[in-house]
Every structure is written in structure tokens, then in C-alpha cells.
Length: 97
Ligand SMILES: NC(=O)c1ccc[n+]([C@@H]2O[C@H](COP(=O)([O-])OP(=O)(O)OC[C@H]3O[C@@H](n4cnc5c(N)ncnc54)[C@H](OP(=O)(O)O)[C@@H]3O)[C@@H](O)[C@H]2O)c1
Picture 1 (tube, rainbow, N blue to C red):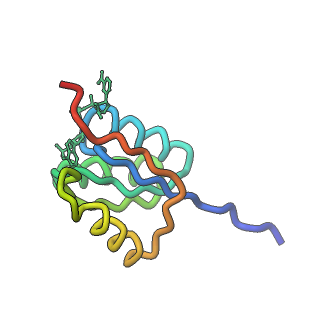
Picture 2 (picture 1 turned 135 degrees about the vertical axis):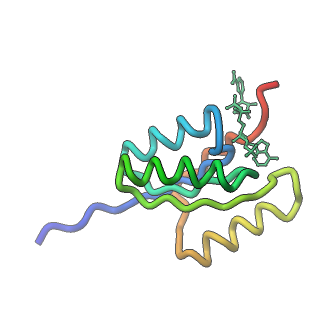
């Protein structure tokens, strides 16, 4: 019997635009499942839809403003509730400006 490959999950913040989308795309291309976080839910879902279709990985989204003190706990609650263990954190959110 051949063991199924272990699937790893990466959480990418700032994944609605810019470098975060590229990090997410490259991780999806490597077969990683993803949790995408940023403030704009519609942008996140659009990125998620494209990555699911292109790479067949699981992609969940969670809209959060990381400048708010409750955001990390809300994200942790969400991932726990979704049964997701986070193997990698790409903490990219922010502004280049
Ligand atoms: N581009 C560069 O040349 C460069 C150079 C050095 C360092 N960096 C760093 O690389 C990171 C990404 O840069 P980028 O050029 O890709 O920027 P970007 O195109 O402006 O994208 C920033 C991302 O961060 C999210 N974000 C911003 N504030 C947030 C908040 N309070 N809570 C949650 N998400 C937030 C944005 O999504 P929402 O608006 O949907 O929340 C977006 O997805 C930044 O940390 C930046 O400082 C970039």
C-alpha cells in the first residue's frame, strides 16, 4: 500500500494583492493548501477561485484587518474551526508605500 502524500497548509497574509498573490500562487503550484488573509474579502475570494481552478488545492479565505488587536485570535479561531493546521506562515501584509 502506498501512503498518501502529506498535505501541508500555508497561511498567507496580504494575499489579496501584490506580492502576497504571488506567494500564494507559488505555494499552490507546489501543491500546498492555503488560507488567504487580507481585509478585502472579494479580492481574496477571486484569488482563491483562480488558485483552486489552476492548481486543485484547498484554498480558504478569511477577511481580517491585521492592524486590529483581535485579528490574530480571530484567525486562529477560524483555522481551528475549519480543521486546518497551519504548517507555514507567510506574514506579508503591509504596504510598500
Ligand atoms: N513591493 C515592494 O517593492 C516591497 C519592498 C519591500 C517590502 N515590501 C513589503 O512586502 C509586503 C507586500 O507589499 P506589496 O507591494 O505586495 O503591497 P500591496 O500590493 O499594497 O499589497 C498589500 C497586501 O497587504 C494587505 N494588507 C494591507 N494592510 C492590511 C491590514 N491592515 N490587514 C490585512 N491585510 C492588509 C492588502 O490587502 P487588503 O487591502 O485587502 O487588506 C494587500 O493584500 C508589504 O509588507 C511591504 O511592506 C514590499
